[in-house]
Length: 141
Image (cartoon, rainbow, N blue to C red; front, side):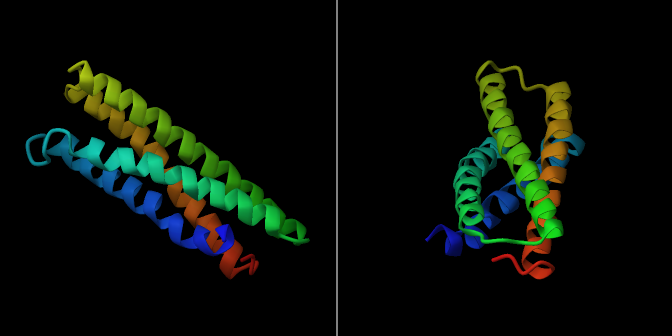
């Protein structure tokens, strides 16, 4: 069951993290264009959807038979970046919620959030690229 679901599930955190990144860029460049707490409404489902993506990916990995060394290296890198993305978005979301509840999310903090969200966005891009390489280059399904 997890094997068939993983390719569909992973697109939710990819899309939501990308959307959060785009909203944050606009928030920093044009602070009054994006509604005040819109990013939290995107980050919370992004963080929550990353958990089933990682869990289903672990189930896919468990179901794999023998794969070549290069495919295994790609898989390990994919897993590393997936875990960095998941933990990064979870931690950032909890910190963002806490700072927002404290009323401390001023423009300096928004720029700091953008810096961390940029790293998470890059991590999700690398994760997706490696996942695509696993499927299209190494035929790992």
